[in-house]
Image (cartoon, rainbow, N blue to C red):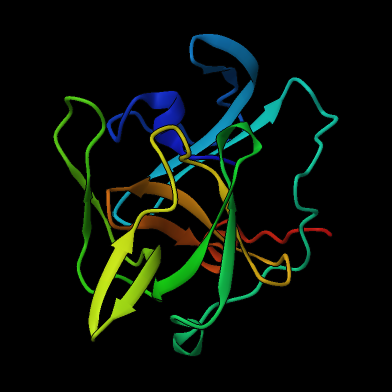
Length: 180
């Protein structure tokens, strides 16, 4: 599972269904078979089968969990980013209040609803300073809580926040589970 925009280049190509099997390309290199994408106001999601079935998890996933308001600024999170880099921070907001506009290169912005907001932040004299946890190219990275339970998938970021689709939202939409 990863972000659809990695394979489609943006929100304007929709491939659905089991019969849609296409080569999956990352940076112009064939790396598996692309099965499904969902790109709407809640999802930027692609399912594919990688060529290398011997995945080495940086963090071995456990049973996912749903986050709630009690996790905000309390629960430590980790994101396994590109190249195996581990970013650490906290949940800044359980769900963004407004749709988050996301740009894909020169294409017009596409907005996603219900995204988690993640960051590294400091609070000095009641002034909050936020810093994003991810870099360009980290889309599709898994977000874990402090007990290695998957809680989201990174879809975008800016200089202040990293945005992720909650894992519970993804699994509910796909009628799927994670086997640990």
